[in-house]
Amino acid sequence: MRLAIRESLLAFRRAPLLGLLSITTIAFSLFAFGLFGLVAVNLQAALRDVEDRVEIRVFLADGTSEDAVATLLGDASAFPEVAQAGFVSPDSGLARARQELPEFKDVLDVAVLPASIEVRLKDGFRDPAQVKEVASRLESYPAVDEVRYGEEWVEKLYKIRTIAAVAGSGLGLVFALVAIIIIGSTIRMAVLARAREIEIMRLVGATNWFVRSPYLIDGLVKGLLGGAVALLLTWIASNIISRNLVTTTFFEPWQVGAGLAAGALIGFCGSAVSVGRHLKQVWREEG
Image (tube, rainbow, N blue to C red):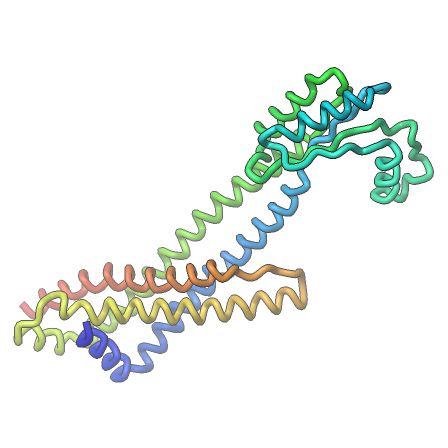
């Protein structure tokens, strides 16, 4: 392993321009992947923020007793899907409506706003089927006059989230494959440039692993360095966007670590795919 690491370092010293070109190429390909990841992270954060507002509004029938309200509140709070349930009096509802809709504050009246119960669901229980099921359970109580939860809005939100997840996975895979192809091309240049040295190593009895390992380590290190540069460029882009356009959220520490690990893995995979094929080509030419 030490010899393989030393060979990888010597190769970089012998052709530093090629090494820097490889790292730069990998960095920009991963930078495109990082920008896409940044968009995906912020889109998911925005969708989570909107999803947190999903609630079920239970309007109570006129003349509902306090005991019936207390029973409904207790039962709703005990539902496994429910995070919080709270009573909203007509006066509280009127004050909130006037605050949220100031243009209609003069026409809003407490007489048109019945008492209600607001039900907020736990994370993971906000897809259309589960929201509808909880609403149906609440609607079965005699004290309930009407249940609203914005069925169409919830379904659209869920569809957007599903489409974003599928598109994100697909585009992420495409960017990863492009990075592997680019890394493979740089490794191919390195193999062809050292064809004479590889021939000499074979003549003195070097094993296949001994010949391959410097390239694998080279690809891993270049992928790691390219990932680090790509993360730095993504962080700079995130700050520029936050200052001039909209506030963005950068990756969490574990996502940064995952990005570096992904860069190293992509570098290793690109090298592994390329080095075997092109070493066979060199050996055939020697034969």
